[in-house]
Image (cartoon, rainbow, N blue to C red; front, side):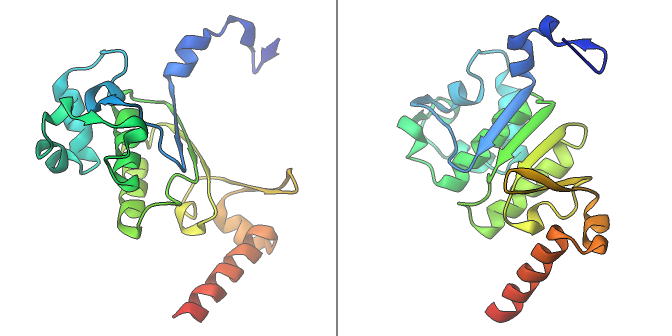
Length: 186
């Protein structure tokens, strides 16, 4: 089968998987060392891991952990906060230089400061990658290149955010609703 002139049967599935990172609402970490969670196939240097930790502002925290990169995570990383776990997942994506980042409500369970940090790292470090974000917080996606709005599992709108707002469709209504909620909560 050809898609845009590419025979999809010739795509190496393992290579395709290596080029993607998925960061979900519930961060996925495994029991074992922090290093193993960031670099499961031992492909990167410690310096590359430290650089990624610095870029997500976890370097100081990890330097203070017993064993540093060899710090033992409990199953699911429960000895780190949810925000710290999300940042480890983000650091893993940075180390792997992922070309496709899929974020499924990745900032839903983190505080505002961590949300902002994740968004800054995504915008700065993955500007040459494709970022697919599933989000309910509209401020998370308002400056994305394109937005796809689904309604009942069907595409309702697809365009630049400013165009969708100007068109007065579902996205515009969501923005109005969010702005109204923010006014009421202040």
